[in-house]
Image 1 (cartoon, rainbow over the protein chains, first blue to last red):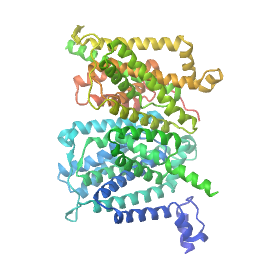
Image 2: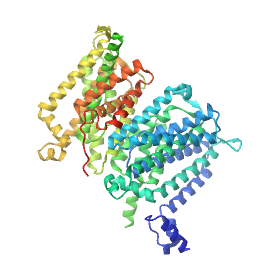
Image 3: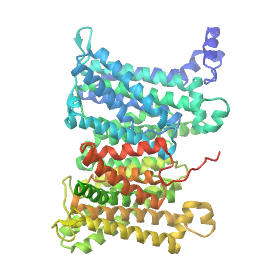
Image 4: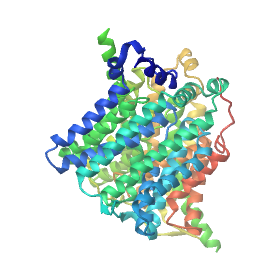
Length: 338
Length: 294
């Protein structure tokens, strides 16, 4: 057994080194294997404790947002490139698949990957000039891209149904429409687990180290042979692909899509989830998405005061935990352990 | 044809003047803190809504307008004191954190406006009648002249403030080098406070000047803030002349684009322009080329 473990450790050089002698207990306790196990356990247990469909609906919403945020965190947290326009990719994934299916009579199992691939190509195209920019200029450019997408979606009503949105055909698999909250919960739950697994592996791979290196200093990264422009573009496209996938899933699950999905406010919400949960922390993105998706559900009790409360909570957490919730808690835990 | 052009230019300059005021606010705060204040558009809303309420409370229009600008100034001070200063004092507040905090402030102010007023659209009475006047072939509402005149006056006053007064010079010194400014005895905290108050008052001025034409509501700040940000970028972030030029240019391009190309895409024009500029000349129109020090 130790021999096999050694080989797999070597396949991912530099990943958190786990001595072979420590065996599988240590491995389970690691953030990667253990965390993925816990996530799988939580995702599998929740349906048994949900009292009604509303809980499934909220859980699906949480999982979809978490998928987008894990992808977005690769870009913002690890590569250090902000995007204030990711809702654009998210909405384009949804609209693309919806338009192909509704107006072009494509089967949904084909329209979804086609739309996602098209969004990836678009991200690659606009990413090249955009990612040369830094700081506020990058923020402005991504913001501009997002706003343009949202205006186009509201205006091209022949295709998109305009500001009122459009109906989206259901996903049909093996001759049957995929319907009902528990089934969709299963799909997005597996989707979330796969996304987290992919992201955790990515950041512990040479690609992840290259991203963190160029986050620290692009010039230093270039001098040790990291083609920073290329890696930034790749992670940008990857996060756009993830956002588009989540967008397409959302559209076919809800059966309806509106241009609000592409709005600046939605882009900002996604970034807030990432920063609130913790930049450069995969679990932070999941926690941030969960907390900030659940919060408005509770705040609806406050009705008119909802937006005010949301703003206030945001200010207070950012002032006191500028690193985000999860990294702050991790630090507190490790300090108390010592 | 000539008349049509004159009309486009007049409309463009009017909305451009507001963008210029918002862009100036962005640049002033950026110079003091190197942060983008995403609540800048909300100051426009605060100014307009406060003026509407004060007029409704029976105050004369002129008093209401001045008071509304002052109210926004106080809100600006409060934002700096309660949100920005604690964040910077706690140490590690990088640019992204500050951006998120100002977005939080924007949401909070919008939420307060929703509660304090409502979600409806409110008009403000025009400053001097609504009888259209013809100038150089363009037909204008008198309020447009108020917008242009008020903006010009504000820009001149600002120019005088930054070049002739000790406080203005202190703010410029802080923008160039905060540490050196502090060593010369300038209170950089005071400069931050003054910058937010000034930015808020400029935004509010834009809000009250334009409220009789475009009306105002709790959410007018969103688009205005984004376009003001684009205008500030267009002129080169941190440059005052650039902010004014960027605002006017954006207004003109928008009105010409809406008139000649497509009015449905009026709001997109600003962002297409700014993307073109960023992709092909990333320092802005006025901004100098800088090389990064490692």
